[in-house]
Amino acid sequence: LTKIKNSFDKDGWSRTIRVSDMKFQWVRLDGSGAIDTKTRFDSKNSAYVRELTERDGDVATPHLANGDLTLIAANAQNAVVDSSVTDPETDEDIVSYADIAAAQIMDFEDKAQWFLDMCQRLSTHWEEGHIGLAVRRDYLLHDSMVAVLSLPRDAFHKTWRFEFIGEAGLDAGGLTREWFQIVTEQLFDPDIGLWVQSEDNQMLMDINPASKWCCPEDHLKMFRFLGRVMGKAIFDGQLVSGHCIPTLYKYFLMWPCMFPDLKDADEALYTNLSKLLDMPEEQIEYLCLDFSTTEEAMGSTETVDLIPNGNETDVDADNLPEYLEANFKYRMLGRVKPQLTELTLGFLDVIPEALLAVFDFQELELLMCGLEEIDMDDWKANTEYTGELTGAGPDHQVIQ
Image 1: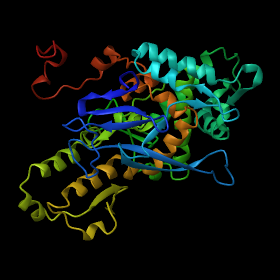
Image 2 (image 1 turned 90 degrees about the horizontal axis):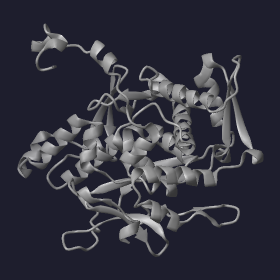
Image 3 (image 1 turned 180 degrees about the vertical axis):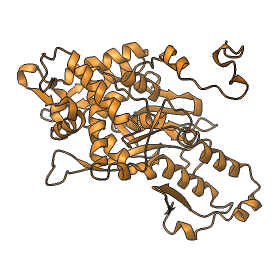
Image 4 (image 1 turned 90 degrees about the vertical axis):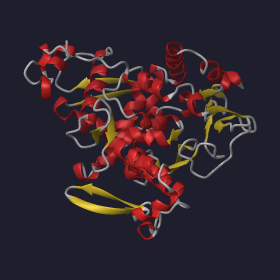
């Protein structure tokens, strides 16, 4: 088993194989070396993975599956991922468990090449079918979304060729790269309203919980579209122009999310909840907390119950673990559940989950986005200096 597990060594979680059905699952060992089966929330040890339950698409769009996304315990019986990719027509393995097990112990560069090789194995030969997409540059996002959302799943394993209407030139790869770059740049642009910059790191993007107010008619379609684009990008070896907070890559991978991950999404909430853990038990009930939270959007405030009748359930020392868990699940998923569901459905329309089992969340970001290139001249030209640096600016000895 040593060769076929992805270790999450920092917190004791490991992905290994369940012999009964040959599916990958997460396990955690307790201090005695036995498998930890605790289910109650523990801020140090509990971990959760996303579970996506797919349902048939609507009558008008049967090729677009519906789904329900939830967070479940990482060691739950249903928290599993297939360990092979099977041809639905022949029921034979296209990518076997042995292929994936061997790739899991490679370094990143070899993993990335292996992944592209497996995508080639899944690809449809040009002669058997390919996709031509003609879009208007002035309406690139609209035309692209309509086209991509009209495609069935098998179209994403075919070669795509692009045409910008009214422009000369054949797509020998350059137009494809340009299309992925422009489309993802526009979709991740905070001005559109789908994404906001992370409060903790402005280089990273987080889903905007108020996206429905910015794009009321089609914000969920745009997330499904982006998910498909992100999946097609890594399938074809293209790059995505937008780095997300780490938890989003963890959701794609079914990688464990733990209480400290809340810091990436909402550092203030993480800090406030952490203080409760160090507080004397008898003082907790005096804080007058209940199982509800508030959301602000478009100048209005809404109370959201974290559990049924949450605003009528007081927090005390006995139910503090459940309160922490409810806040964690709401902030990590609940407040953006419709958007994240569509994004994940779109991504998995393209990429079989088993292929992702070879990566950790940092490797997936690197595969998808590449290394961030920083324009130092632009950074220097647009840096604002305050406090004691105001006068000297870039010539101050601290900056030098």
